[in-house]
Length: 261
Length: 170
Length: 113
Image 1 (spheres, rainbow over the protein chains, first blue to last red):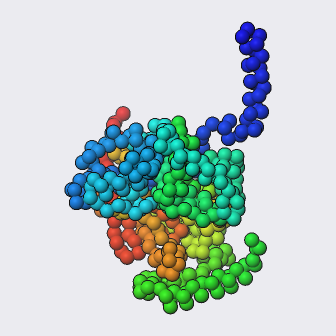
Image 2: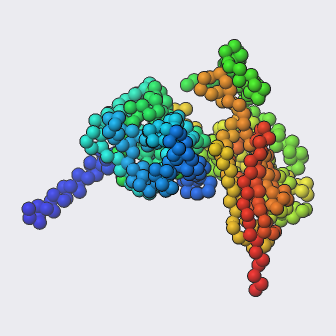
Image 3: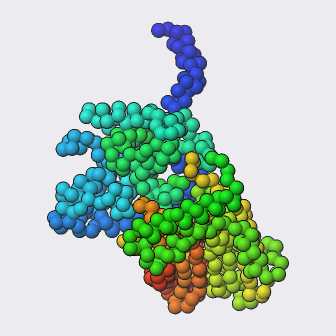
């Protein structure tokens, strides 16, 4: 290819770019954390380490990390050390494929697996304050690192299933996730500003809940708002959806503790 | 949804509330009858509607005929909040903070709340400066009103309209 | 576990300086108007009603809270530094359950210039 042809190809590519952006608005958009779409007051609350209510859960999480529970007489720290250094990479990589169960599990489910199998303690209730505080602590240690969920090999079918759910229209409003979060981020639905629906910040403190909740609880809220029957927290559907959405947020920095409206 | 008239909405709320209270009496487990639940149950059966006139009456009663000194109280709140659950509010009373000149009492009101009074702050000269920060709940878009009663008998008032956007598809 | 109370004051201040006391409490501030999941039992009201601040045993600030204070309530106020000692903030709930958080403060004399 001579210099002339190369220039022509470049010119054609440049001409096509804006067109491509019009046809595929989502793909042309860079991934942005929900922080970008939050109001300045909410951003200020997240940035203030003292006033950030999520830090209260972190404090609980630190205490729980050291607490000995269950028949084995172990705490989280007995296996993973005081700082849980080897878990930092992993915290940003959930949901992960669990070979024993043959399906991906979320970080919450992994914590409960640890409790039941290695500590001999009872599993914590989904989205309970205790579970969320430990999960938030793990995510906080990975804060700033890029989201890196693997969707290769055995994860592929779950990723495809999640993707199908993401694009499936549901509920009385007959809406799919992508209609708000791919096509209209930044716009308003009644009073609420739509974000890209990235989950790099979960578990997050949501002002409307007044507590820290998981991404699944947020999915339920989305479903209810679209007048769809929500799935259960930790259900295979939501885990698959989380696999897709987490992979969609790959590269975004993990934010914890995050505050959202 | 069809917008119901306020009166109709009140009646409907009363009816629904009354029915659920009756159902609660029949079917609720014993803990519903703990004394501390009774007030709440009553409140649910006969929900308190936001009453702006009453809230304004409360403020009038506090002012008690005094004309608010302009510029005495300065408040800061966002004009638009995403969720009424947490509205940041900053209060400043411009005074010397001496024994003779400090705000004895600072009242905070959200006018369209079912219970308009948000908080009361008692300040002492040991504070050095009358500057407060808090977060309050607002049921709907309305005015936040802060009234300061000074030791010398004067009063100050400042208000700010806050638009509260509720959750989508609420 | 849920009882987390937190205050923050500067470690060291000059005498006569005005400093900020920041407080944060973990509390649902339940206004008592909600049904819980089974639609019958009303979630009972449970609020923090009072916040007091003592500076070396002296009452320096006092607040009354009602149902419209946000959950996980945040409050800041100012104090004038008098002498070194302890700042104690006390929260009192509906059932007179008292929770406190304390922080030491070191007051230094102004260097003579």
